[in-house]
Length: 257
Length: 333
Image (tube, rainbow over all chains, first blue to last red; front, side):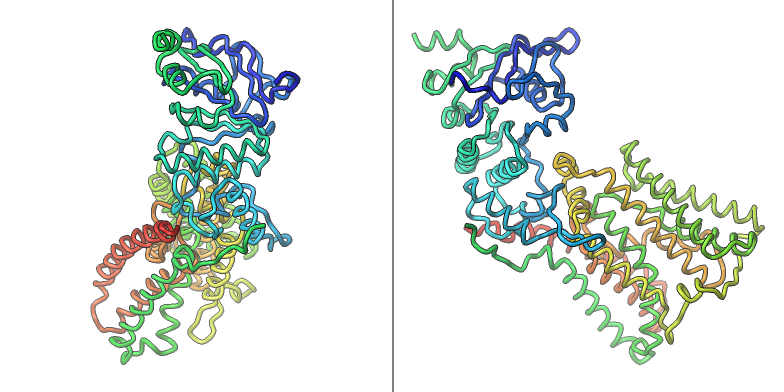
């Protein structure tokens, strides 16, 4: 992997809230075309880290580099301008609106002039259906189908498709499979693979070791605000990964004896 | 390449059908019971349409606002305040119709902005905020009209263009019916065809989701609060020219009637769902019921009973329709 610049790199990042240290000495590199799994228990600092990458909170010390250049992600809007998009667990879709209306919410394509300017529904529908199909959703063929009738996995895939269409270079997925069953999770995992194939960098936050094992290229395990381990695909078995997530190095060493 | 998108008849696109059928049934009922007394005559028809038109101009934006997740109960006072401005302005200060109408509309923009800002800043339910502004506005209009003119009902005379635009009659039919149709076509266009309409439904359907998607939810609500206030002021101006008098309390009936017509018309009180055509039918139901009772020979005391029962049925039906819409196509594999 030498020679390739990380699309986003955190260098010696720390974050304190008053006397509480949420993160310290964090080094993470996320590469295009790779899935970087961010693992760790509740309170390990995952959400602070995501907030930092998406411009919600600034780091206390350290540097964030985007495409090799130091950047100051002062607001979510600024992060988005760089192409850093976040898909939350609840996705934020509008159940009573159709697929195309959801896909293009806030960026509706229009046609016509002046007061007759209107949404170009043909174009919106065609693009939306094409892009969710590219994420592996083939059951939905009608752009008017209400998003509320889609499954949880399909909604995640729709949100991923939308982010990619809007030019995301880094896609942060905040526990996308947490609320989903086995079949629905595989829909999301499949969409992650397809997004990776398009050359996007993905940050995949999860509690679920098998899910991380299934798609991860790199892994960072957070433990009490520090990087407890970082490794690449193939360096650890699923069992090791699971124990790492459960408690960290000590337990992992005991387990491998 | 993608296959041609498949089109299905969707319940969301048929929200108006329920209110349309309900209107037909209620109309048939009054036609049978009140037909002999003249409900079906030209004057009977004009009667309920005239009622519906003025209510409808207010009910449409109230319904749009409800779709975005907010209420506006200050419509009644806006009608009264606009009517006082026009009557006092023309009778006591001798200003032109243009200036009087402009003043009323400016006040409406201010009131709409005030409502939207207060709701946005305080995060209080718009139900309470606009109920309060309704009372403040009515009290002020009443107080000022008595202070300036010494009375709460102010006569006004006008034979200019404004009289033609707002008070012309075609037989028994008021020109307000035309304004109502215009308001409905405009609102339907905005809601179904424009990005703004998409934002309205998204704001009411999932506020956080809409905000994260980049929808300026605050601005959406601001525009709708202003739209509602301006429409109410329009009705106030119109009735002032129609009846040659202004009164600060004249519009109070619209406060709840507007919301009732919207809900009977299929708008979900919690937001995110509704149609303009549905609101039009909801308003027509209100018009037919309130005038139809006269023709039955029964006491009009029963009007509220009738409307209340309709409202309950409508709210229950709307929830069922919403559920149906959310399950339609869900099991297709």
